[in-house]
Amino acid sequence: MKIHIVLDNIRSVFNVGSIFRSADGAGSVEKIYLCGITSPIDNPKLEKTALGATEMVDSEHYDTTEEAIEELRSRNIPIYSVELTEKAQNFQSIKYPNELAIVFGHEKKGVEEDILKESDNHIMIPMRGKKESLNVANCASIILYELTRE
Image 1 (cartoon, rainbow, N blue to C red):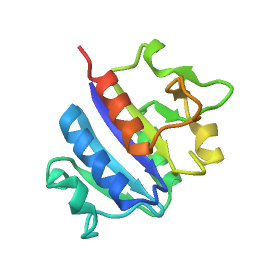
Image 2 (image 1 turned 120 degrees about the horizontal axis):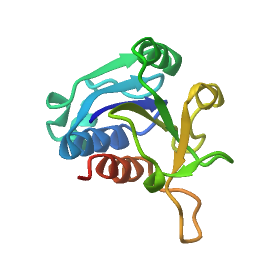
Image 3 (image 1 turned 120 degrees about the vertical axis):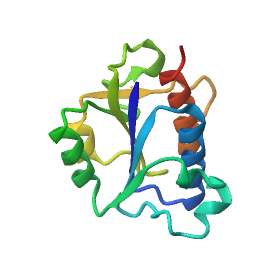
């Protein structure tokens, strides 16, 4: 499996660092697309949570998430956005392709509406408590490990 991670305006540099560590730990991540306000890897705060994982996983910063999506589309890579929408499916009930991009959105605003419209699928993690969502870095870990589960 080949996984591309798209970070759509993630504001916390610590979440970005944690996602790098999870990407390295889960394996199969080809590249992390750091989009918009998402911190580039030269931010010293990022290393506090990445702990060297930025050296293990390829990444690139894009001015907008749309630019990253265009690049992925040009390579015919399906786009899966993690967002609670009416058409979102439980992430554990899907048969995933051998290569895909997973979009994780802003901590409060979620994945941008334009990106959701461009996505092939919406997926979500069912919440069994009272809160409606998880921290984006925790969400990324759960989904990455599900994708790479044998």
